[in-house]
Image (cartoon, rainbow, N blue to C red; front, side):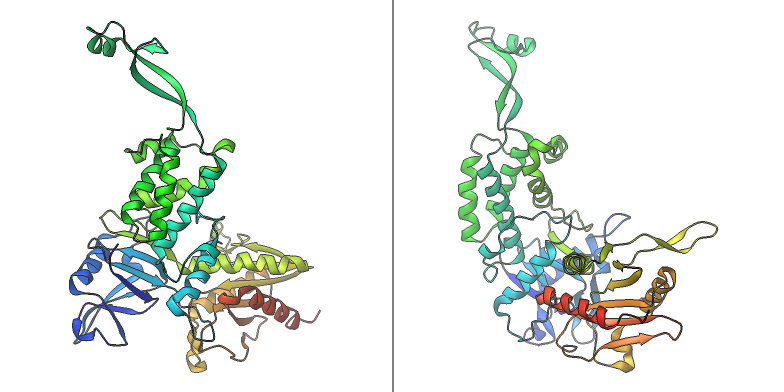
Length: 438
């Protein structure tokens, strides 16, 4: 891994050297920029996969040329020429200090761990040198921690079919191979037999992943850890047919320790992503939709905060439809529904930075308000909350709410993702303050 360009969400990237030191742009050398544009065009979507053009916008600006802006996706793109583009979320810390983006990366990793399909629950973030590692190296380190955990528990063996030309008879004679090999050597037998051995599909995939990561990592810490772990897999042959070996993996009670590792290996070996985003060229991408990451993170933390006070908390609720005739159509799925003693509160998360301008409705979209109004009427509640991430511009802003005049009130709350527990406790207190009269 060679050179790294670090950008934040919504920052613009240019390949024009005249703007190399311009604060409005992040500069990528012309050839690397061309590779990025090629990458965007090649990663096209279908019914299952996200189209790169949905979140990586290419625009033309006079005097500047083509400009690429990445929106609402965070992670790392590895270009064919070795350049990496690390995209970090915009997170407000109040003090403005975030040396090496260490705070941002740590907060982002906490957010990722809330996602059900993100394969890491047991990693120790305290041991990660996030200020010295880019996201890809951090993900490699997470994988190595999972492998270390497996080795500590003991790698599994299984009865594996073997073939060999032995001096003694064992298992089943392979007649055709025996005749070809042993016409002269009458003392030998070409046989197939089962042997209890660690050379099973799961271990072969892990070893193949370790060997690949050994070539990719530029971290001395990760490189040292890989060398140590490979010793534990000395008796295992690395996988050469990934599809075949992944199809042979079965996760059950005896192989539970491999569940996370198999998800990681599929990502790292086959250039997959933890999201529905994928591609087929030699570039790699580990990208995460921040809208979904934020939604899951807030929902997870809201359950911790609210359930202790008797609230029933459900996420992605499926109770209502916008229309019911001639059949149920257009499902309503609010991110969070809180219920307690007949009281219903709807909360919806939006990963968007609002602006301090009431004439522009603070940047809240009309479409979102239509959605909140529909929730209010279908769930029969006046209490609707829109949860936006706190940014520097809106820090300390007075409470914002909108009253429809016919029984719907939409409150706006800014979630401090860097201090989410305290922030959601504050939100819970506001629920008590805004409780409608009986």
